[in-house]
Amino acid sequence: MSSNFLVPLNIVSNEGTSVALINLNNVDYFKDKGSSCEIIFDTTKETVQLDYTFSELKTELAAYLYDQQFAQTAVDVATYSLLPQDYHLEVEYTTTGECTITFPDVQRIAGRVVIITDTGGNAEVNNIIIKDTGGSELFRIEHDGDSLTLRANADSSKWYVY
Image (cartoon, rainbow, N blue to C red; front, top):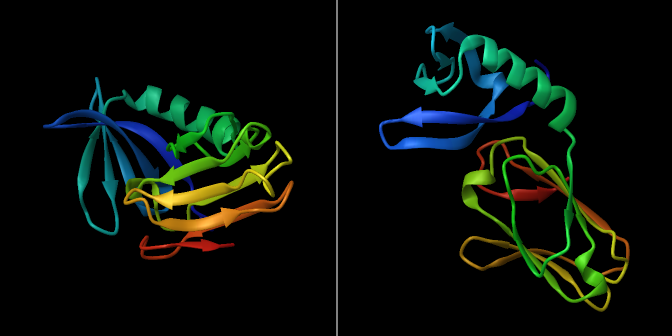
């Protein structure tokens, strides 16, 4: 694959089930295990147990790539935390007040792109502030109707304007 495809999937581990983003560029192959399947990563040769049958996994991937790859999320709250499925955040809340969006470190995956748009059209008065989990400001949208496109760098250590 020539670009990154980040897919949220339920991951089963000895600590329970959680949702994680899987970068399909790092996948070597999937192994059918009957009631579940394994994903094997070529870069680390690690194996992860998935909470899907192989058939469910194929259906889940197809649905995600078709419907969710460029999902739009309306943000009409004062604080919001980036989720695995978020791609385009449309911030309506600037009509009401300032909006702070937190980008958890776990969501910063190499090549991931996130777009934030002031759809409320009042960011000049009520800014949109993007922060990391520690509360440090990363970026700020302060002009009405502006958009900001961010991309995680290759080693997943920082977000850059794209």
